[in-house]
Amino acid sequence: MVSRVKKTSDLNDKLQAGDALTSMDGQSLRYMNPDLVVMRFLEPRYSTATLEFEREVKISKQNHPSLKKMGIGMTQTYNGLIVKGVRKGSYAELMGVKEGDIVMAVNGEKTRYLSLREAVRLIDDGKSPELSLLIRRSVAVARK
Image 1 (cartoon, rainbow, N blue to C red):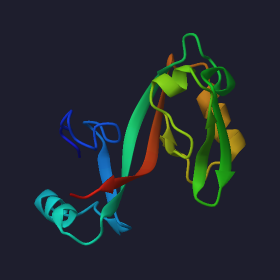
Image 2 (image 1 turned 90 degrees about the vertical axis):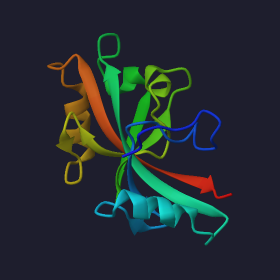
Image 3 (image 1 turned 30 degrees about the vertical axis):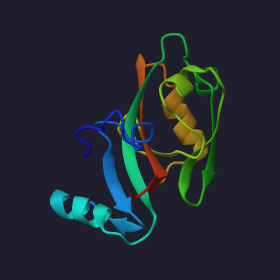
Image 4 (image 1 turned 180 degrees about the vertical axis):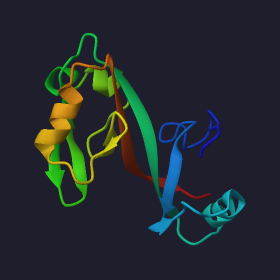
């Protein structure tokens, strides 16, 4: 779990406090000691590292009751439910959703075995005033 990111860091625009790192350069970090993760990141193996993390994004549905009105387009692929587009200036963009994000869960329900239709139904469900998306994203980070 990322506890903080320095404002002067190259990671400042990529990671946030609360993000859960899941892999680095394709290796799972789920059960690795945090000190070992830091040591691995600092090893001079490549000039860049690819970090994968999960982040919970909360979107108010008060003025944006449907997926379309939130400004998100999605598609189902072999890798899962993928954000294929985010409308510029939309509430989803303001909340940090980006094209290419993998949606791992909607309101706590995992999307792995859901069809696109079932996932959209969960998102558009009017019972909750807020939408919670657990997203997974990969970022390239320069090592210095």
